Length: 273
Image (cartoon, rainbow, N blue to C red):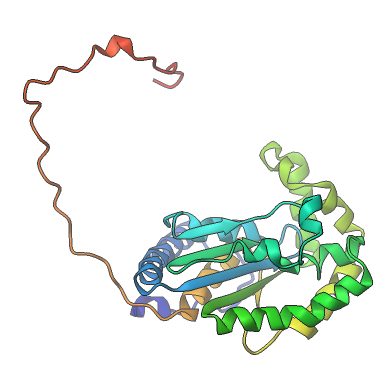
């Protein structure tokens, strides 16, 4: 296991770290993630990482940084849309079970089966009976996953109401972030207390020994990203399988082959020559 990843980055700070310091540490951790990826592939591990939290808590940013330099064939992001009419008639966990990893894979759930404990409960998309059944069956479902050999890690991103409001306001004025502000996000602003109650009930039922919740303080995005990645690396013991330096072989000679004229190809306009 790499010793460099043991460095403690969990101390809370009141101010943003300098950009250069953040980028240097992020790159170091992302290099460790590449090593972890190779270990997962080599050992045939099955890893599931769940990211939950309030809207604008920073889940997507962390997921993006984790997957940024990884092989999408090994590290896959599962962000399921609202269930179809057919899926609504299925066993609740069925469409999520279809996303679970095979040997040598890691799946990052950008929201998960915990939709039923959060948005579905608060917004009235499920009945009280369905919610109660979820609270009974979810711990057993997760224990079953762990017994099957899946490494299950669950993160809850905790953001203050002041910081969430600031991020919502920024989405109103930044055009490239407008898509992040959905009607459901707007409705959630009016139901802060209801979401808090739902989260507390969820933790009371599903914070189990086999699959505990890990809370990430996310008011400062840079710190949340580094802390979460560092913790994920600490959850799965791995060894460095970095191959020896590679030497590129010489390219073959043309051996008389004449390529078609370049004018036969259609090129895109060079708006930025």
